[in-house]
Length: 433
Image (cartoon, helix red, strand yellow):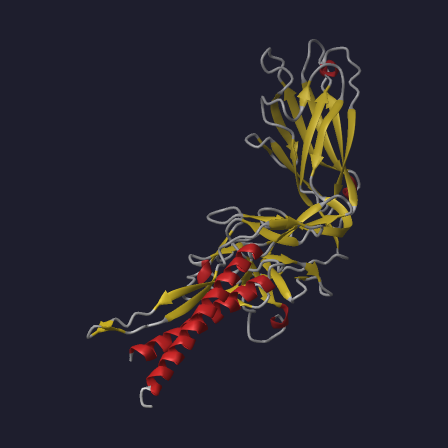
């Protein structure tokens, strides 16, 4: 019984070391595979115990585990949609072949890195056929709230490189200085003209023509102006008229003292803005808050459009896309405009090592890994997303070669045990002679 248990123990040792060599072989073979997570083989003893003063060898068995939570080094690339994660979290992907089936949404799989490029349909896909998933943004660039414990709502990130796009102007900021000397008695009372370009709903360039007319008193200074806003798309019709009063005190001199609406949308004192309706819709114009220096001022003797800003853009062609550290996918146009089109969340699980390993360095959640949650990159336990980067394999070739030497020695020793048992059994057989 003891001799046969020694034979069985030696056989189990051969099997265990063969399993370890297989994992070492896999690790070395994938030492240059981006995103590869090394496999670790552990030995566990099997104890049969003693009986009647004899010892029975139990042998050994192995368990293998893929160390998915280990992170490889990040290397820089030249492709804007080469993605990696600095810290915890995984990218949601799906097989491109599953997108066209009629069985519902494709299965969401997870990976830590990928080199994504547009295919014929504009989808961001790797060479192995994995398509990046994300939440689509609204036309204004905001991303709605989606459920975080399910992949419902996510769709393949699709980039239409040849797409033409423009955005209408909805907000303006007027940082204009009006000459204080024009509101004093005896001044000429000449109006000041300002034309501000905006873009309508079809990307057509239009103008809001602003005229500032000073109020000239008989004596002293009025510190008052009449502001007329005309829309070129409406035949230069007046869309707003306001009376602006300015402070002349020592502490607040030159700042807005009052804004009185004659026609057009009312002035909002808390935001410092007013709304006028042009041909394509409303535009919010910020003229500054009462008593604050930013915005409209009345100082000195010079008319100066100091700071004019607005949103919106002319129609332009998409030139490239980039993904920022928060997972937002931005489209860049040749007009200089930028638009958010998708948001890629990072997926985290309680036990990443419990996931099911699949081909192409992808993984699927399991009962052992726990339920996943979709985080915004950089929030919660997740790290940030890095573009122009790939994650290297976690294989340490030197360490694997050292483990191979140990495994080879252990395998040879186990084979020697079997050879010795065979010789002992042969001696037992020779007793009969």
